[in-house]
Length: 71
Image (cartoon, rainbow, N blue to C red; front, side):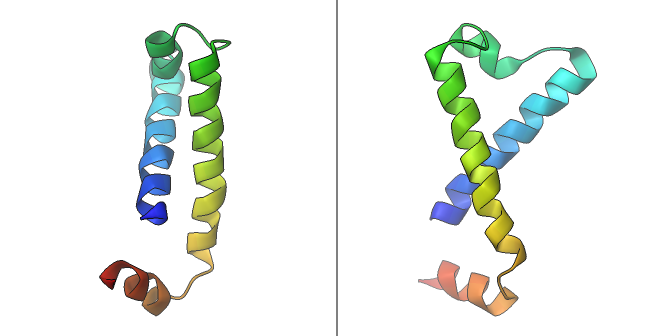
């Protein structure tokens, strides 16, 4: 379950960065009231933690990842 949450947050971060890179628009800041708003900073922090967690996916064997999702 934690893997899926981390992947979802990482995707949210990737889409947000895509919006910034392509259009100069920060969706998270727009939704939560600016880059310095508490909730924006919370989302940015959660996305960063999710990205760090997803690094662990690179070092797991395929069988281990599949076994975790079968339970």
